[in-house]
Image (cartoon, rainbow, N blue to C red; front, side, top):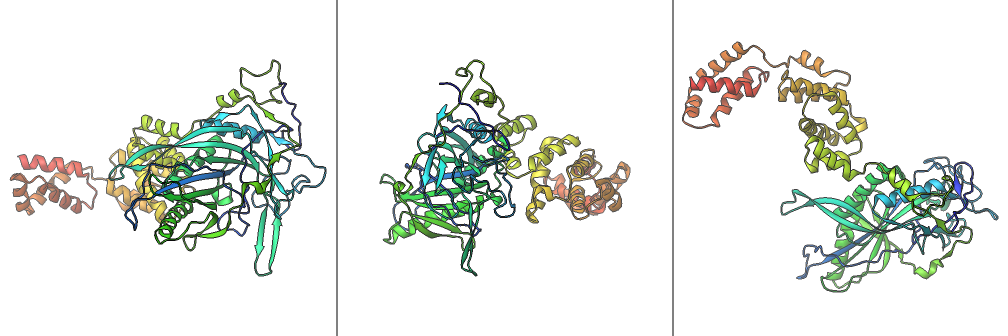
Length: 557
């Protein structure tokens, strides 16, 4: 087949090709916490039994939970999927709407090349098979924020299928080990987003904003290989990190750029799967975990009291901490899927099938995109462990906290301290202060340079570890000061006069003969009492290791 001709549209490079997707969803309205209308769509996840049993609740039998996710990520692109309209969060209502977005008669879709490349790159990063031919379909339903009365999606043949995502959770008997697990990816498809319906209850009216209508989405459909909220939250966070590393989506959940639908059911081991419910439009990883765990327990309680689980769509009320019913599930036939007549098949190539003399601007080469894949989070973690000798769990924390890895690496560049010591300070002291005050890394009053200077003072034994914590606390509360200034002002330098320190040790031993006797009788812990007394006398300005050396020499003499 000859390479399809690309059409250039404004603004940005776009083309009149299409591809397939197994479209199911259409996402309605904004995520949890907004006033937008929720999605009305049928879940496409086929549930399969899992082998992770839940703890027994009320009855004698154990329950197994089956969880499948459908994740919608907004593609990082300057323009929409089929029009040249700009994509910009929080723009004035209806200010970014083209004739095609508003579904005016005679307008035609022009496929955005950037969105296709983003889908291919994401599929490759998730170990998917990239279909060289894919198709677009129309999914019909009627609502005010969908002007055309249908959504262009992928129902028959999606752009990527059969992938996998490896994630890690705490496991072991004491839950103190990182355990790797794999969730299968059924497919990745491209589709349009809908507009927003903003409901004004006071005036009993609904306002429509079409700025989001037509924005390109990647829908990642996971097989139901999960069994609890913790696993689901970990998977979504890992996918979020991958999308951000690739640059295919900013995946900012607070701006609705990453939304999750969760399909949940429970059953007894060895019995048929239970009836599932779908919890829609979750835009927070924390709420995702809470919603799934609540829904699992709700279904168990319902069944154990003789109730019945309805095949329905629910939403999560973050204030009440529970799921609430929205509507009954719509049948698949209601959507009346049909091939999109205005978009021909999308044909992709690899190095072996690329036509001779093909214009690189007119075709997409899968292998060329594969060669541009950046370092993925899993590789970054392995590098941190090998390069700096960090524990695997520390590498996870560095990546999972936004901006923390960059902060850590900037400190490493400016300090002589060992990487393990730097990691300890960043993950315990620094991150602890952030959590205590609910701050992001970017909002920290302590810069990487300031922490590096503090660690250099500690590494050169200019200050003790306890003094270093005092200095850090001062740096946090007194922004603008340097570590050296704080040390000088508060006189926290370690004592350098060994003779004076030796005299202090001697006087301490003479003042506490019973403790000295205990040490000489073999009580090795008793020497810690003497060390503490000497440090107290020096206002914590003496190195405990040096004090111990002096005391041991005195005790042997």
